[in-house]
Image (cartoon, rainbow, N blue to C red):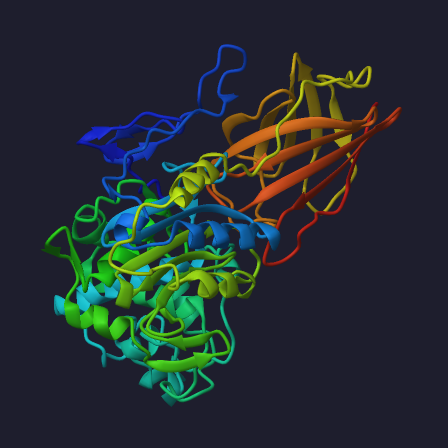
Length: 525
């Protein structure tokens, strides 16, 4: 699904780092890492990404370090999984942290946080006169409109898409359309418009997709390309990538992957009324309307133009599994989070408990808590340490292809290669051969084509970044951890060996659908 529309640049030069890129004809191609022992595989490397943002101490910007520490403590006590956070006030980052192996330069899937970026494109296009709020949606795609289209469908406007009041009665998740290879605009007009547009709120990625499709139809380019000179480049957002739908339209409701700094910049330009570093990026009128209540919404809160409303005057971009950019406009502050939390209602109480209360004054005296906060954020870690293998692989297994019994995953065979302190797991299915090499003593970072769509909200990129480790939990049981570090997903493989074969159980830390695949059973011939 990747459209290779991602760049990694700094000071006009391509940055070659832990996920190296080669630029050819404007496209970014990602080769694997190189290690002397196993080509394409290596230990996790440090991150030296520079985001161009100003830094300050919390107290210098009137923020309580103790309040930030209390927020982190509450989240940890609740067992909630954060991958990163950045807190900005007065255009200065005052606190930040990444739970290893996540790091500043890594991109991370945003899910529906993408919708608020789609709103940026819609606002720019409307201000340029490409289309208007009251334009009928059917007018842009007459080739897809059914001959017997209902009056409700014909009445739907751009404004209805922006406010999630397009008249649909059910949500269309991105996971529904991702496996479809026909134009998604055609799929949109197959959805019944049960309610009169403008009278019923129904959150749905279908509405956001159609905004993207309208931007593409009226500008002649994908929304990702349209935004590049108008938003990504002026904002210094230099690490991103946006999936493409079958017709080349950027999925407006999801599909954007970028780093934490980009999320906080998205919030910051809105907090400052549409300006960035003294230059106007968005019109003040658009920002004001997009980030104030346009509809009461639903149980999750009121809604603007592809932005959720929070307590007080706060508003937020929100993605599945709790990807967030939260703006506190009265305090000129933004909090950005990447997470693996199923249900934002689990973390929101802790956010609203500590913010905006942490913004105490214009400035505060220096506080020892700032040192404690720096120490805390410097030692954040998600994956537990590994230890060299203390057990040997079962005899007669290493290097053998094991035929897999008929299964619903289409897996034909699998194999385990144990070399030194590493194990390479390979398997073949209808999409080809895939492999991941896991280290026993250290986590190994690599690109892989390992299929994971059923456990990963139906995403099936041709290549994705993974950090993999392994351990023996018993003489017969091998456990591998695959952290897909550009996503919220972490897969666990439990492989149980017997004299006549092996069983493989694969599960994921969270998903919108199934979280465990049926057991694979392979036999030694």
